Length: 402
Ligand SMILES: *Cc1c(COP(=O)(O)O)cnc(C)c1O
Image 1: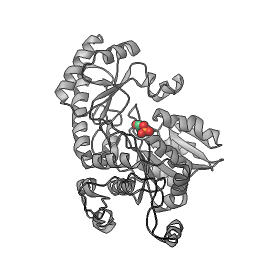
Image 2: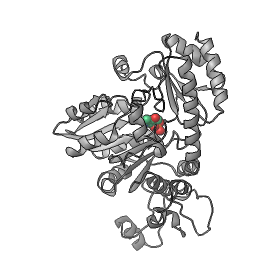
Image 3: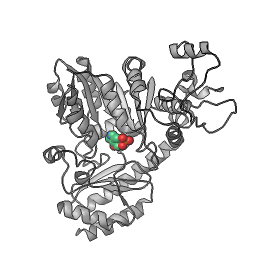
Image 4: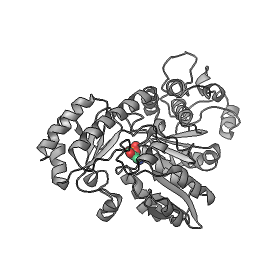
């Protein structure tokens, strides 16, 4: 690995965000390849036994085993850390591996975690089922209610964990206010920033300690692979994250890291266009249906806070069909362009019925409390021409009975 300009923080720190997205983290081999190389190898060899010993001791730089580090994965980690403004990034095979690792690495039995109640279905499972199985107490609160976070603090509270905007309700959590409460009690703040992407919202600048992503969403954004990322400071990485990650093995594979590296080059272009499309589609839907929610619209109940934390309204719009589940299903089944699927942040526009799919595992009472109703639909707006999306939605609304 010769030219290391993309990985020299003194150099890259001067670059503007778009340059970091294209070039950050790039390491070139002796061949001088323009595109990043894919190192499809599980292990690495050493010139001498002394060198092997020195690398295992950490006295010599270099790779030992791809469960821990791999050059292609390092490039993705470094590029993400640069974009986020974090000291370190650690890649994982999926977004859920990132969330689970970020939580478990720094917790032990007897600790207490407070979570926002509007969470991705599998994150709710971590809070409601997995952490309690290991003797970690959890409380879920209405993330929008800043006072509720303060009231939930106990002497053993170690972590606040939330998404904003939350999936699928788009509830906004005031990152700065929650971080202030947390830090007064020595509590670590972990933010799942998937819906906002690294471009629209900077949780670390607002006081968060750790930011996690499902790279499966906007970062790949083309429906090809799964991935995750944990961004944090050097101390958390060295003391908790790296040992947990290397010994439990949620590592991202080199090929996926390469796909995600290439995706970052176009992230800004894609996310900006998706947000533009989402705003146009949301405005149109709001003329036809009640209960359309989009953080970029002035009628969104937390619009002011959303726009204080995010530069754009995001790519997800939700709507509420007055006829409940039956009319929601009729609308979905009548769509000709928009796919029925459960991803978000994809180039293709996707519609989801959260109550029966992504959030099916959440108890019906908890679904209602979170604001997931039988008539709710989540629309992840993609990169098609917004006029075609609107025409497709219009004819499907007609078919669903208006
Ligand atoms: C998709 C998603 C996850 C999980 O990511 P995977 O890559 O599917 O494991 C976590 N949080 C949010 C908000 C998500 O949208």
